[in-house]
Length: 255
Length: 307
Ligand SMILES: Nc1ncnc2c1ncn2[C@@H]1O[C@H](COP(=O)(O)OP(=O)(O)O)[C@@H](O)[C@H]1O
Ligand SMILES: [Mg+2]
Image (cartoon, rainbow over all chains, first blue to last red; front, side, top):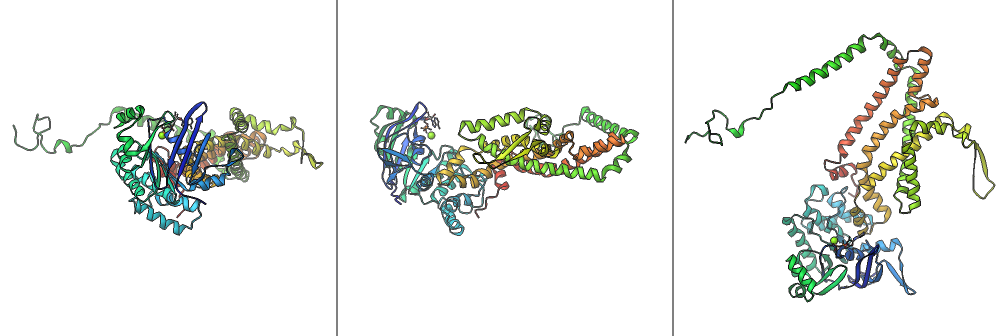
């Protein structure tokens, strides 16, 4: 089973009804690379991210994740959908962090982190709990394992969510505006955890409005507008000297 | 001006004693507060007076029949009907809810039709209808399609009053339970499904460990209400001649003409049973109450045992 931590998309298309949300998107993320997707609201950033772990299905184009076609196998001039079980295997190697955290409210922080290993990988509980405690410590939350999500702040919840995704030992992490639902003073603690992850060589694809973070940490930036990949390139280059007019206008508005 | 410490913030008069910020705020009782009490006490006193002094209540008769054999048997049958119809109704309701949530329009449409029909007609009518179903289908034959194996069934013999009662109550309850269960599932956000999916959970694991526990705070209190409603609703089957609590009381007063005392006997028993149920019900409701920290309620209600 390959898990080389790469994402390749070629001419990716996705429509909701008659509304084309992704128009021939090209994207390459190499192993260990940090890639940021930026762009105005409704431009298809979340949809692109969600295609990468199969929360949305792709209509057309190539999508290869971890070195293999994602969700489909190519056979006789067509892509055939894989069995659900195969899809869950592919998904388990991709961690996803949501804007609204989406922790399981019926489980403690520790159980949330253990849920993937125990329920999906069938890891024994002792090992899973030890790992969960390690991960919670890694995101600065040792001692909070017994708390329920409702008892944690937004920033703490998002860090638990990151630990939960990491517990599956993913080769790729996806983040969809992980700090957008947070009070400003809590943004830093989550970005700090993400920064650590980036330094440890995790492949990361993230949608964010934190331009400072993108500039500091990202290798590549993809600017999307209205379903089109308008500009793609070196993060600092794109953010400092955008070539496209639409990118310039967007950056002027957000910076 | 004044150099003494206690001046009011407005700087007007020096005040003796407490600082203004330490003073109690008092809302005086107004006449209508006392009036409400007086009215309520008067009503209760009047009711007590008439129940005690009006001979027609025949309290001695009430007490003499309160624990007669046939009343207690009726009580037992009422409880059995409640448990059986509620249990079967919940199972069928679950099936209907699943059908209703199906992405296949014919399936969800069928369930929708069922729910509309059974919620849109009175239970009493439904009960009488089931009792008389033989007029519609006198004989049905149960068998395996495309084989010769089949047995004819005499519907008239099958549809005893008790069967009709259970069938009627169950089918009606299922429609309500389906809506309650569906509401429970609707209360779980899409993000929960997506989070479970993103961890690679299978459909069953997702349902069992993530979704179902979270539907409980919406489903359990509503189901408690249904149980209480069902307990009282079973009195309707007395019209079919099923000897449950009300029917047992009726059978006695048909002989003795002590109508009121026996209706009081039945009412007291219903009251005792609903009160007995409402204690756990209100505890459950408090625990699951939506307004006060729903997430914590989910947590305490369905301790997930990954630990
Ligand atoms: N499930 C869906 N059904 C229909 N339209 C959708 C769905 N999800 C997203 N869209 C539409 O697709 C467009 C892009 O959405 P999204 O990817 O969420 O944008 P972004 O994350 O950049 O704000 C929006 O116009 C949105 O309304
Ligand atoms: Mg979005």
